Amino acid sequence: MHLPLSGLTILGSASLSAATGYFTSRVSQQRLNAYTYRSAIITEIRTLLIRLSEYEAAFTARVVVGESSGVYVLRVLLQSGDIAVYSNNTASIGLLGTGIALRVLRFYADFRTLQGHALILAEIASQTGSSASGADMQRHLQLVRRARQRARVLVRRGCAAGHRQNIWCSTDLT
Image (cartoon, rainbow, N blue to C red):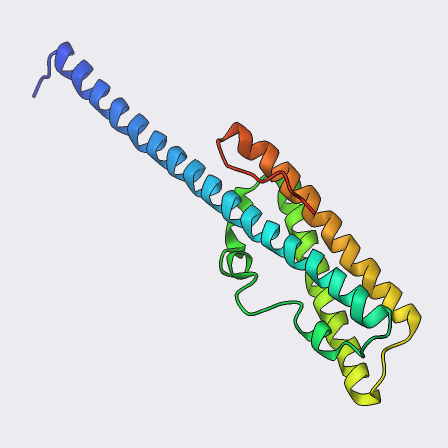
């Protein structure tokens, strides 16, 4: 069967249009997923930044000053569900840029290290009935401050990128 040239042109144009539409929708969906994940992870990190600020104040007021051994303060650093976005969507970290993905991973590694250190200090306090050594307390404060600093940087960078994408960001970065 012989197709006229106009038929081949229409068939080729329809095929090209369908392929372009498919790839455009895939790219659009990937951008939407990246936008949603970025917004969710920045919101989670902002929440953790607030939690770290409150934790540092309570830790300094109660444990470092010697008001109490701090068993309770040390155990409440992380509640279940606090890192749900990161835990449930770790495979989506590739949707972020390489630099921001590495910063997110470093922040969560610092946060988990801080949590482990807090649990060790709580165990020491519960077994001995007194606070851990001053060096341990200072190391713990350093871990808190490093995690807070990483969180601040991530929130600022996420908000700066978000303003270009119409994400609302609070300017209060305690």
